[in-house]
Amino acid sequence: MLEAVHERLAGVWIDCLGFEAFIQRWDRPKTLFYLDPPDWGTEPCFGRGLFEQSDFERLSAALQRLQGRFILSLNDVPGGPRVVRLGVDRDGRCELPGGRGGPDEKGLGGGD
Image (cartoon, rainbow, N blue to C red; front, side, top):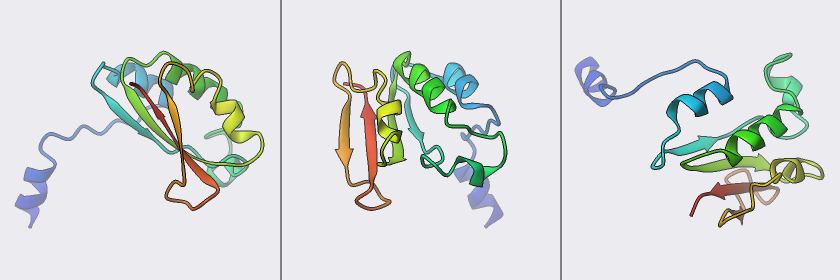
């Protein structure tokens, strides 16, 4: 079994970086990022200072600079999606209702 795990993970890279550094390091025109930040309003549940509401604006700015594409999972509550949409819905970016978390979660997709 260990050999099978080794083979399966042979080409996998694991990085422990903040989201901005991670995106900057791995962004290429054919890269697809899946982002699942803490749901709006639950940030303190993930640890003090790990992800603040102000980080959504930084995340939005990073997504606007992407060469590749992204899928963003985030709850749909007043204030949350509006912050993330700071430019995210431009140039073919779309919003897909009904993410895995139920009717109050959105999947925001970026790219062509």
